[in-house]
Length: 359
Image 1: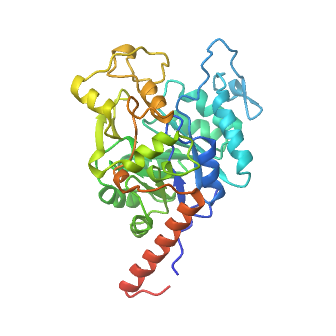
Image 2: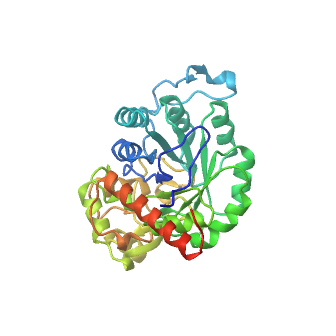
Image 3: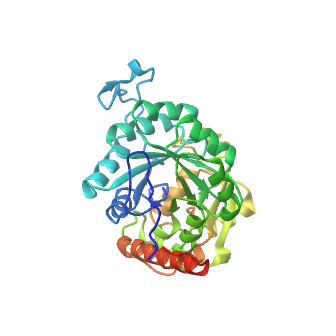
């Protein structure tokens, strides 16, 4: 049986080369991340809306016991909610790998990053924007940083700045997108561009056959998100999971986002209203995005994402990838990962035999 490639991200090496994609707001928290980590993958907490809401609290002046100003960094509001999610995940999966996905577009990106490092996350994934300062901070604390990119140029720059790995995310991924290109078109060029760090394929990876295809194209790992929603361990409400299971292929749509990027979601009454009206009146209680113009933006993405994660799938926004129509039942995490691994090994064996190779 052909073995899966080894995914090594600096000193970290999961049993299986599978990363659970970060899903916000509050879809992938400690329960899902810990379950994936315990099953041999890399579990990821989404930091969206886990910042400190009380801005009157004093700022923290240390990170990992070091005075941040001595490192040329600024004190920060400690994101206690994020720290607690990391603590719970590490408690449930003491031997697993727990990462934190932080959108660079978030207003409170810096404090979420500093909190994740201080609270003991094993790695950071940066997406929805690009900040060179992030590489400096992660290097100061020897924190592995995985950069989400969509072009060879972005991949080469990330490697040069010190990224520990690259995630290639295609237009088939759920949530915010940096490209509309197909994974199989964009992946080979980025694999060729990157020299010394692993490339991880994301966006449209649904089963073991997709994993095998990605590995044959040079990826050392895969990131999967949508399939992990329909699991008993996912932190989202049961109604959210059921909506994913019931979705048809034609329900996968692209919408505009206040982030300033296109986004991939499931068609529902909210998206239909947005398409018809162009703007949903709202207040701005969160100030969560650097790019958001407050009440002048087309809708409050924080509000609609929180609604859906809590179970209001009619008035909320349900992010998902292009393969949502193929999700047909609930899984336990260990069952799903076992299925993915076995499918991939079988497919790799078939491809090896058909090409006349021997393992």
